[in-house]
Amino acid sequence: MEKILMVGIVGFVLFTLISYILIVLNISFLIVPFTILGIIFTFKPFIRTVRRIKIKWNIQTFLVLLVFAVGILGQLAVISPSGTFKNGDLVFWSAHGHDGLWHIALMEEFKKGYPFQNPSFAGQKLINYHFFSDIAPAMVSKYLPLTNFDLYFRIFPFIYSVFLGASVFFLTRKITNSFGASLWATFFTYFAGSFGFIVTYLKNKTIGGESIFWATQPQSSSGNPPQIVSNFLLLTSLYYLIVYLQKKDNKLMFAVCVLLFGTISAFKIYAGIVLLGALGIAGLWQLIKERNFGLLLITLFSGILAALLYFPNASATTSFLIFQPWWYIRTMIVEPSRLNLIDWELRRQTYIYENNWKRVIFLEGLGLFIFVFGNLGVRFLGLWEMAKMSKDSLKSYFNLTFVSIIVLSITLPLLFLQKGVASNTSQFLQYFILFFGILAGITTAQILSKAKILSRIITTALIILIMVPTQVGLLYEFYGQLNHPRTPFAQITEKELTALKFIKENTADNDTILTPPYNQYLNLRGATPNIWDWFDTSYVAALSARRTYMDDYEQADIMGYDYKPRFEIKKIIFESNSSTEVKTALAETNANLIYFPKPLSPKIDLASIHLTKFFENQEIEIWKIN
Image (cartoon, rainbow, N blue to C red; front, side, top):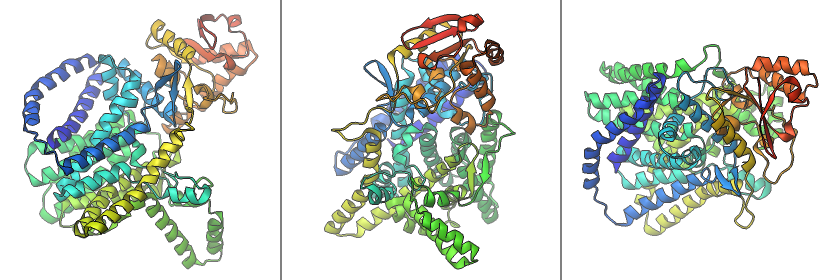
């Protein structure tokens, strides 16, 4: 199973890279024969490997299956109900109506071929986004009879969750050769949460607060494909780094390491930064210690591959990070939705004014302590193993890489924010949490191995009791109680789906759609709001498979587009009473269609400026721009 799953992760990365290259060369149809050839060449080794599997049905097997089954179900629970139909309407929970539809819009874009445009910012190159996690589902959707919604919300999340558990389990086994440590590390990964539930319980007697200390937990990472993919790729990269270090001069392992280390930036740039940065540190130490260039060569070739994949899709004029030290700790303390300790901040400012630096340092240190331990939760048990691994880091290149990743992933967000959505750099913290889950698993296994049976039972129960509230609170926030289920956060009605399907079947692939400007003050107060009344999303591009002139301002801002001029043009078209103004603005859009729900109709009669009605039902109108 170890061989099948870990090689399977490498196969997933290789399939994604080959697919990307073929799409860029505009010969994506070769993906089908390449895949068939890959299956033919790997079929016999796969069957031989499967035949060697001998399952021993004992308590260990049962525990592994139980942890994986419950852990995977927990991760699927926070994504899989979205993208389903309720009374003919397509419904979404949490942020999936925004994030999920953006990824599906990207999937539709990749089916069109290269060069890639931003599907919600027509005519502009797709830049500053790690889109590799959307390539494999896009190609599967293109060549197999599977829907985008099943692939994005159910099939690939299941695969990713399996890969996450497998990469944790088998990496930990490589490190420790201990079944107990591997099982506990997997358990911490799937179930351990922050101490946010303590804050929410003290505030309002509820259990929740997954990200009250800023970091989201691995349980919810299935809702962020680039994040969960980067999680298991980071772990798999270290797994094969161990294999490489054990088998020096192994060209195959060298190539596998370059593939994994080099492509991870295209899946998630944050992971690429910490992984290549840590490997570079280990490589420099290897050069100093042994005069050996092995790890530096992996870093070099991986860096070249990462640059070739990342920079063609990046804007040289856009600043990625902003230096803003201690922002997360400061906002964690004062933000009303977090700790809401305004008095703390007032005292800090008073001490600064009085030059009482001893008290300032004490408050800042205490804030850092709360930030670290709050995010770690019960994973703080890994501090003991972290100390041991740090002590041995100059003797072990793997330990040095592992520890460097942890240090970088906690240090970088304390110093930098991301342009657009500042809090995005908190995603660095997921690697800090992920790795501490492994360390906590190792420590827990060591503690329990020395304890007597009663102490072992009590300790296990206590650890699980502290872990569970985050997962329970997360599910409660998404879906409410069993007897009082929460309604979906947003919906696309059956009639609107009909309109979007009509566009997909009756327009050219490269047509552009103009949609109404998002009005955050509209609020028609439905039990489940229509998606256009909920938030600005890429739903039209995702469901119609056509680009839109300008939607999803938040995503556009993150990626560095100047969306405001287009937003103002949309406002003129939909809000102006002047036919001349509207015609002039329309000419600037190069759009082929105007699409709008009837409550968002333009103020002028579109027929008066010689547009032609293309489609209409009880909810939606579509007009052709002649």
